[in-house]
Image 1: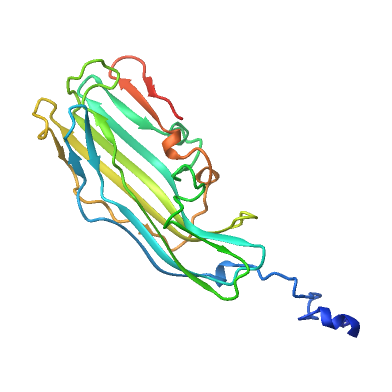
Image 2: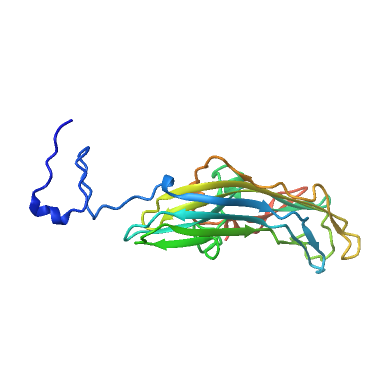
Length: 282
């Protein structure tokens, strides 16, 4: 191994640490990098409440249903953050699959769709709140650390999600208020990532990956009195989320606009005739 010359004595006062090894000289200006191996993740939990979907028949215009909540939480210990760096730790979520059909007898069905996802043009679409991209939210969902910090930081981030939509009793493109709804089917899948991200460089470190799915199956008898038309069919409880033992990469469309709420379109698909856009994407 070749020899390396230490700097003249007049420069020693400017240097805190000299590593004369492999040609590397580290001064006080050097920044320790935050790496995955220096981050501790503990007490990761992901679950869906063990209760059935609640059906509400309070309105003569719409049926509403409220699914149980998906909940995720994790503790994280971040190493000291260097000066002039800001790191955010939190949850990012994306929708990877959606089927949402409301059937009106033999007339047709309405469907909420994500065209780019349905056609296979993207692998996932952001499920951000529409403001805090790429994060799912900016309250309990994220914690921001601004350097310099002199010691490790212990933090907890949590999130929850559920469905609470309205579905018209009558055909959505009809002027009639006659109840015709006979079935609601919904099957939606998500990936939720626990991530540490440098706010300036956008460097991302995926700490945990969770996959989960929510399904709804409701049968409706439109001729019955309001309050006794709809009932759950199929499994009453949701399959529990899967906390993966490996990390999945985050697709680009999971990080920015549009989010799923803005990208979705409501279609009317009659039994006979061409489909019609009822509500276009925002």
